[in-house]
Length: 190
Ligand code: SF4
Image 1 (cartoon, rainbow, N blue to C red):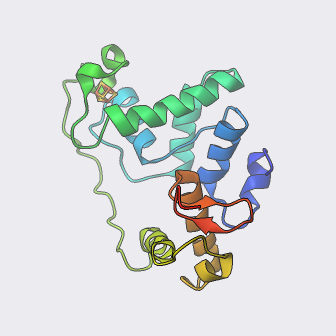
Image 2 (cartoon, rainbow, N blue to C red):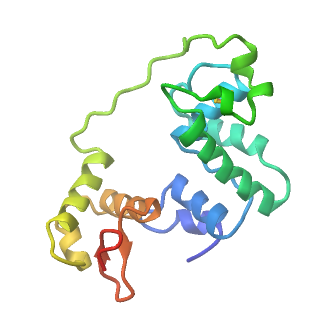
């Protein structure tokens, strides 16, 4: 597996998020890893907004890059911490501000927790979305008595690029595991 973001991005099925997550978390590099949770933390703690607006890869990356410490290994830990903060503390509906390590400097807190008044987020239809593809892939594994070979998963969705991206994200998220012999299985079922 390459460690360089540009090389990772050139691989089929590897998108902006996955490439940077591999570089940061597998190789300890300083590069912004931006998911929905991170965007929300930055919107609140840095910009004082109640929530993140519509995504913009360029702006979101620049926002997070500006926060990262200079040393690679420290930046990689910082990236993991940002993601955990958004997932566990600064949650979308009920942020646990009293337990938050950045409470004292959070711009949203200091501004009096104003309601989000930015542009409405686009609601993605379910049909054809990555969520649907991920569900199809998981259904294949749930319906199989044991680990399955790649062609069975390939048959679940015709768009190979989207299918590869979704399979990769399921592997990264730990919802699917790959066996030593290259088969795919649900966690703990091989
Ligand atoms: S203080 Fe509250 S709003 Fe600010 S970052 Fe922490 S959890 Fe989020």
